[in-house]
View 1: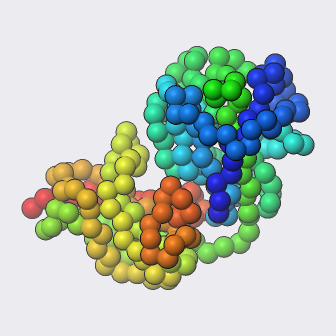
View 2: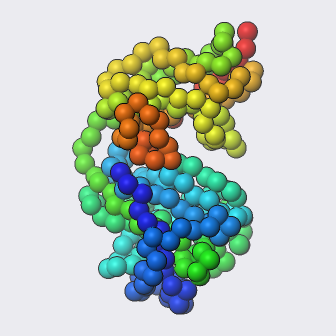
Length: 260
């Protein structure tokens, strides 16, 4: 998988947004979007569920929405799905779509502001597309591969830990080598990474994952399965080692840890 360059669509195209299908220009395909304006980083991806996609990283000032468009010619077409994103950095943003995707099709991941009713996507309306320093809409493209594939799995139980800088995962099935990545909880979902361990292709049991901090009694953690698609045995995310998915989306069960 590779990160697609950010697509710069000229400000003049904003006049045509209600149609969301008119021709636009790609003035700066290699532009780097400054964080103060917002950014979207998305990889080409092989889908476990053909009506879900994952965007690696979204950053913006203020709350907003990530909106997935299908392609229409050389520009973006109808909306297939959207999800709210929080102020600041958002990682591994999963979006459910209104239809199954077609193998090899191109999609657009467009960033919108949330200027109307909070948490309600309103476009056409208040929630207009976000632009960068060049007044270009932030909407990188990515390509999806859809086909039959085996799914991985993670089985983890709530646990009382004896070593506060380690947790244990009872069973992992990985399609190819990968990593089990431990996230702390943030606002009811997974937040920053606090540890990871390599796993082999196939079945793995009783995996100990070292953490970079002591656990807090009673906290919720997430065990997320990633591929090992880059340098072997080197965890690279953001990068090629993207989250693994099953038919329901990212494989990341939660569990509660406690101190004795």
